[in-house]
Length: 159
Image (cartoon, rainbow, N blue to C red; front, side, top):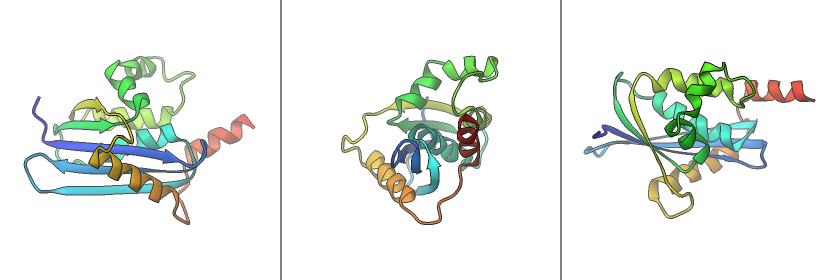
């Protein structure tokens, strides 16, 4: 499939859990048009930020049915979709699965588009991946970070 948009994503957490953030670079294929997004949270995990970056990128698409290639260095995210694990988790109502809130949100926006995934090795001098990493780390280092309410509430239940 030829893609209209490439979405590069990365997530970071200082400590795991700890302050975290995601970074997204979106490029329209064949056009000199690029957008970047990032956000940080005061207490979260790396996997949550990896997944949230993908979600935010997909949610930014304005046209339903867009052909998208998501490029990520997260085996957690890429394998969960490519190997279709997330669809099995959905059928079992995410029982015993971490990040159920984000996987549900992911599937809602994923199903609006034609999405392919590609895994790339992180910290391997890939320009867009390096930029996403910079954005994620920057986001995590900000003051007045957003609250990952679902995660913080889940953590409190475990205490």
